[in-house]
Image 1 (tube, helix red, strand yellow):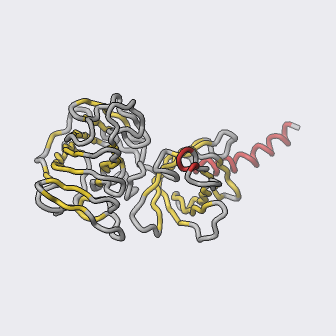
Image 2 (cartoon, helix red, strand yellow):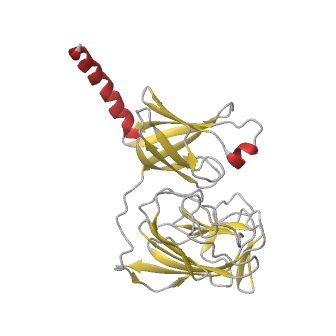
Image 3 (cartoon, one colour):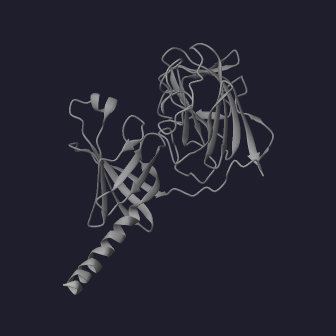
Length: 317
């Protein structure tokens, strides 16, 4: 009996070992979408009865919990079912089915909506890199760079060239006329300080993308309790410690410091995120190259936002 049990365990263990190769954090690049877009997934316990995962972003730009995970004939399959606002928007919410195989240490996959007949969207993924740099007091400030000259859009371009470009500069202020494309900086940066002054109107929703991957939320939410979607939040990941927003129509400021994966945000003079650890991409991401410098994104497709300064100070050793 013991011999038979041992043989069975030996037969099963290689399968569990292979399935566990899907575990970890993955940076995903979509193939064939209208605008550059990147996703993120974290998988745990694949190959066991306790498999779980999180995904950015299948629905509503949020951190989505994965509802079902399995491996069939070497193919990873996971399903995400819409919840909350995403579910209410549909009479019969359909899940998204993601499939992927390991190919030379990378994932190659597709995603399709349950019940739809159109061809699935293709995607590919690499393991998220370990970034060891810390905001440990050893970083020195280089010469500040003013990415907005107060005159025109020099140094910026449309993130989505297929959408009308409705950004203008008037009286030294950059403003959008939504709906329009997000803006993306032509220059890329790694570790830095950013100071920006912005103004929003009632019900505004915008954001600043760091390295083209991590969104700091801009939101008209004066006086409301903070959460992971509040102004100055690392969008859908980390809530600010307090709500430091001013009323709509007033100029506000962000002072943002990014070193490696450590993020600090000062909102209107109040520190609301203090060296928090960025685990992965947010929904604003236009690229999945987490180990490389990246651009800034100013979100303009949601609602009105004005900017009168955007100064970057690189941090170097």
